[in-house]
Each structure stands twice: as structure tokens, then as C-alpha cells.
Image (cartoon, rainbow, N blue to C red; front, side, top):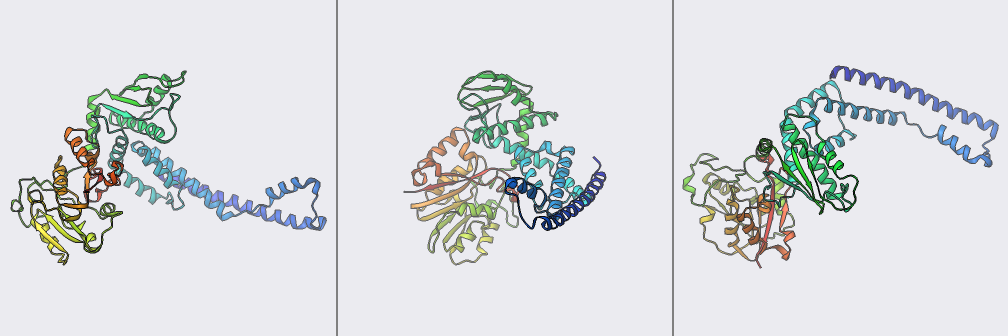
Length: 464
């Protein structure tokens, strides 16, 4: 792909189109002159017997012609086609999932699409090349996040040898091309693309074709089984598709990509037996303590739909440097903040707000007092450490109070016995009595700005 020749051909095409539009514009002007001259013969009369013919002539010859708009539209179409060629011939599109490609196609059709000049093309290719690993990893994570997490071999951050695609087929036994079925079909293509890329192959699409061939010639719910290079696929009468991975090494590679993408899951690695004195002063990170402040946009999500007024008593039991504390104070609340790390506790005290009290302590060692109207927290994520913090925080909540916690997505979908017990406990304290309101997904990559891309949710508990 010669970028200079692409740019030269583009300029030549635009010049030729400008000449053609000039000729068309001149012809339109002459057509209008002819219409004026014709009035000397017709005096403006029309033949009603041939009215439709007259209207057709008028529509063809005398419709408005805007040379500026025509050239702009041609240029936009030409530039979009050039960008499409560049992305495809550079093979960067192969690393993108369907969502990423849809977004790229949308950008190509936008009015503010950059011109494919030599400088813009080089800059774009450099940026995409530098981001190639991230684009690929994001596509892998997005594809597997769409799968049904109910099966025990799949959670929010890792897949097992079997994957479940729900509601793939309609009542007639064929692909569903709407709603959830269409989403699953696209996800299936992305999953196959991921395995083909990691195996060193560049072609994919055999799986959907093989499933189509196996299910032709019949009608209604039915069961079929298909073998491809990477998978064994079983299609069930209930419309679901189960996919078994045949290559354990490829499965390991996929999970390595997921692990690299999601990064650390330690919002705080302080154990329940540690005290503030265990951490050295003068450093932001001590021992194995990893600190990830809550991004402002995530705090907004946490606080959405909350009514906080003057005098509302709030507890923040993992306060960090005050990402949640600050906006809550601005809303008029009285806040008690607990932080185990001495330096961060000092930073909180430095806010010198009259409605803020700061305690440098290990929250899990603090004796509960059920006096708080609202508890807002982004607790430690390490392992299932967050469960201990949420359950301990519950004991600080006053009757009628509400607790909201930012948790890893595994809190909602994890399939271990401990995860199931935690969700069963949480379900007993569902807001408004409806469990569907209890868990809320945060936007993907909510913590990317602080170095982690782990999927997160907000859980809401209420004490009656």
C-alpha cells in the first residue's frame, strides 16, 4: 500500500470531479436560459393533456443543483472509501471486534471525518499500530463478556472450555437475526475470530457456515452437533448453543489476554489483620497495598438518583484520598471517613472540612454502630475481600438506611460457593424488594484512567 500514490490519486479525482461539476453547473444554467426563452413561445402556458410529461421534464432539467453540496458529498464518500481501504489493507481491521468495526464505520461516515492526507494517514496508522494490542484485548474482553456467566466455567474475567450462547435460534430452528439472537451471532463470530488470531490464522467464519449447513433442510426446534478446527458446537432445542474449546493451549492464551486486559483487581490489598502502623509513612504505596482512586465519572454513577441533604450522616469506610467524600460533602452531608493508610488519612484531614471526621484505622477492626443514613464505598477487591467489607459495613447502617458499594463484576456473576452465599445474603436486603434493582453495571473500563479495566458493578442494599 503506497500512501503517497493514494493521496495523489485522491487529489486527481477531486480535480476531475470539480471540472465535471462545473460542466454540470454550466449545463443547468443553460437549461434555465432555455426555459426562459421558451416563454416567448408558450407565454407560460402548459398543455394539460400532457401535464405529467411536463412535470417530468421540469423535475429532470430544472431541479435545484447545488455544486458545493454535490462536491462535498462526493468528497465525503471518496474519503470514507479511502479510509476503509487503509484500515483493511493495513490488516488492522482484523484485530477489531464487531463493535469496534461498527464504531469505525460510523466515524468514516461522519461529517467531521479527517481528510486522508499524507500526514493524517501516517498519524492514524501510527496511533492504531501503537494501540493494536489494546484494541485486540478490548475486543476479546468484549466478546466473552457477552456470554452467559451462569455456567460455572465462565466468570467475568476468565472462560472455561465450554461457553454458552443463549437464544441463538428462533422457533423455526434457524438463526435469530434480531435482538439477543443477533447479538449472540455477532459474538460467536468474534469468539471464532479471537481463536483464529491467537492460533496464527487470519481467516474465520467457518463456524457459522458449518452450523448453517448442519441445520438446513429442517424446520422447528432440533438438536445438532458440529465439529470445526477449534470447536465442538452443540445446538439445542431450547435455542441455545454450547461451544466446547478443543485446544487447551488456545484456551490458555485467551485467558492470558483477558488477564492482561483487565489488569490488577486489587483496589486495596490490606488484610483484616493489618493496622495503620503496619504501613510506612512517606510513601503512597506500602507493603502490598495497591491504591486505585475512584474516577470522578464512576463516583457520579455511584451517586446517581441519591437524595442527600443537609445533615445526612454518611460513612465512607475505604476513603482513600476522598474521591467519594468530596462530592458528598458538597451535597451537605456529614461524613465519617475511615482510611487505613496514614498518608491518605492525612490527605483527608487536609481538607479541613467542618462536616468531615477522619479515622486512620483498619475498618474491619472498627466496632459497628448502626447510626449512618448512607454508606458509600469502593472496598478492597483482592480475592473476595470485598465481601468482608460490605458485610461489616452493613452493621453500621441505621434502620431505613442505604448502602451502595462499587464491586468487581464477579460479585454478581461469580459461581463459587462463597459468591453464591454473598449474593443470597445481599438478596435479603434488596431495595424496594426487587432484586432486579440491586445490581447495576458500571460502564466498561470505568477504572481505565487509574490503570485497571476490570468490569465493575454497583450493589445497593437497604435496611428496613
